[in-house]
Length: 123
Image (cartoon, rainbow, N blue to C red):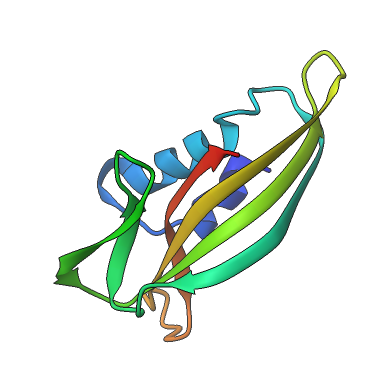
């Protein structure tokens, strides 16, 4: 959980929007000053058909942007996160999420995938 590592993991975007959104997603329910961070994917499934970027709509339902075809891979995930907060209390959060990758290839590697979106909500 180092922000400079997340920078390499996320796709480039105007004004680093994707990177900023990724950092916000990781800190959303956790806050600053956490330790003993453990993130586990309990279940996952592929969502969509690998052509469209998907997102949670305002009702929390996964939806895809069918007007803009690209090289996307979407996963619905269930995760368990444990950590000690800034006052040393261990917390556990179970979340459902949508993870979206795009085939990037900008570094000359045609197999490189970058994170575009990571949305979660607490179960």
